[in-house]
Length: 639
Image (cartoon, rainbow, N blue to C red; front, side):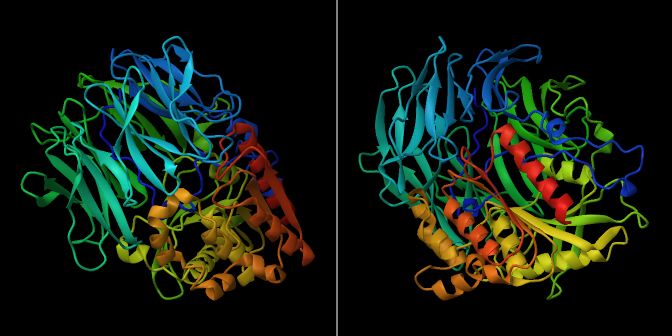
């Protein structure tokens, strides 16, 4: 069962234009010019790169003999019951259309909770799969969105749904046997619910004022009219987050950047109302959780675009020494109920996430999966290098540089600026089939973490507020100049590509500069006025925060039109590829339709790939392959 008390991932403005929920974007077929390809370097097709399997979830069941895992090996994510030795994979679902995402085993038996939306519309429902294989929608209805929160000690569970008011999520408690539910908290205040204590008494919630200032509230549900305590009184702009409750429900662990550029962990003693420092690092603390038996604490730190995980024995205070493992980041650490077994994923630039199981104290962790297609020689994949380059104002911009193995100062290669979503996202180390395939085909990639990216301190994060398409765009331009300084780059063949907000900056680069030879816009915003006027209703809790960062379409309409590429299609002079999901609720299809029409009117080559069964991010393997084929064909034609 779910043993880590990680907080519910509250909706934030940073999620607005994140690159979507697909594990990666897709792959491609042909090979670049033989003149730049050493004879011994193997190159692979998109079908081979996407024969790679993606895995999600590793929750250990109550009997400790199986894990709940989602895999896309059929082309769509489905659930499997996986034995602890990895030898037996029992299919639990057989979806051929919508991705099935794992939530948890039930605490007492092998019933399963999972979530799924409809064609990428992000209106997730929560489902239970019974022991006999039958399925029940626990949150039926149209146009509602539901999210699992946590289990209660008695086997009941908590669910958020916006069925009463599309703008806000109310909290319900479901009986673990009958599935009858009761309303626990009616969220008229418009909070982002971030967690509930193990004893079910306290609710942790966040209220945003702007993208730079919010508060954590503690709500006591044990009284007829819930009472609230402000956990984070402060002055000025301070950002907070909720990590978890202690297992005894006496302490709330939350993050704050009040004393640092980065998020530090504080322990709020509920009885006394006092907060003390719990943990700090030289980077943002991403999460803190506890094993169910409370023996271990797990802490993840965002260390220069990589995740560093520490597991601490709470009795001794010493870090748990893991067995020898390949290079990479630990992800999704889960303990068995008895605390004797650990499951986790290991992921690296040159290796997709593989599932491991470790009997704690034993000399070796067992790897259960072969995620990378066996036809691909792992040694030909590329590990990124963390680099920094000066922007127009001298600010150092961090980035991940992927150098193709065929690149030399006498065999120069074309290059791509890769822009993440967000706007407050971050390009991080870890496997990307899309990037690895392009690099394998001979394209250098510079994944830029322009100003406004998360992970580099609060000052850096807010440098792009109300300056989108301006200062952050210059960071991309100066990323090109950095690439041109490398003697193995063909400095006249540099393009730009990105998804979501990265798609926006791609179109901004093509419309407002003459720096890039091509652009690939993957579901990018092109009309900020329309986008901000048509945000999904369930983002209401951070509307003001969103406006503080990007602009209010009523007050800032003139500036928003000025930075919206759709109004400046006549300025696009170089070829563009646009890729879009028809069911995207964040970046509406009409945005891409109009952008393509504006470029065509200008007589510039523009290609358009529309997926009728995808949303904001492509989750179906066949669509990811098709998209990547389009990327490569376009690049081979124009770059």
